[in-house]
Image (cartoon, rainbow, N blue to C red; front, side, top):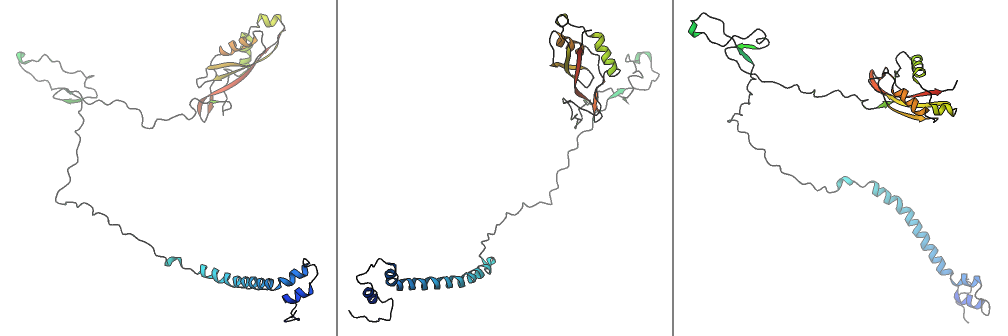
Amino acid sequence: MKITSWNNAVNQERAELVFENRNKEYGAYEIRKNYEKQVVRSFLFTMGAILLAVAIPVIINLISNLDLSKKNVVSEEISLAEPPSIDKATPPPPPVIPPPPVVQTIKFTPPKVVKDEEVQDEPPPTQEEMKDVQISTVTQEGNTTEDLPPENPVVDPDEGKVFTIVEEMPSFPGGEEKMLEYIARNIKYPPVARENNITGRVYVSFVVDKDGKIKDGKILRGIGGGCDEEALRVVKAMPDWKAGRQNGRSVQVQFNLPVNFTLK
């Protein structure tokens, strides 16, 4: 077998001679066989990487220096219709002046001496009738105006709201001591509770409205035996309280009151 270049290590003929009757699946045979292709691929890849590295800055520079203002802007001219001409020769119509209001007057003529047959039966107006009325030669009714509500009525921002804590809390007439005296004087121990030795504290909730009246009474916690109903009855029968106040206004305030039931 003739070898064209024995010194060329990757020559195909040399590779075949060296690996004749040997295991060609060995890695060295494949490396020698594909050496030229791998060299060409590596060269092309290296050149491409170099060209790309050189081209990227150039492309970025071109993009950054691109003048976007040179793009063609499509403009459209819009023609507006001419405004209607104003004829200065024709004066505007005069403003409409409403007629003056009719003033209520009462007929009053100064007395004069006449003959008996010329005396009129119509009596002169009294001083009370001429009060706040313009004197005239005829009697007529004037225009009346109805009392209209104010344009911007004052609305209470706390209308209908029930507070639990306010600047000035509601109070029983005479204070807390008088309230305890009132409860002790008016409470009646229920017979069922007395027979069953039921004692304890009943909590009653109610609302003191803007007029100081008690409303919406209910039991928060009871002990039974008729004590709950008795405590609620006494609370609802209380006299009017001094209403609570918030921002200088009387407001509704919820109040919780404990009523004690104790057997002696």
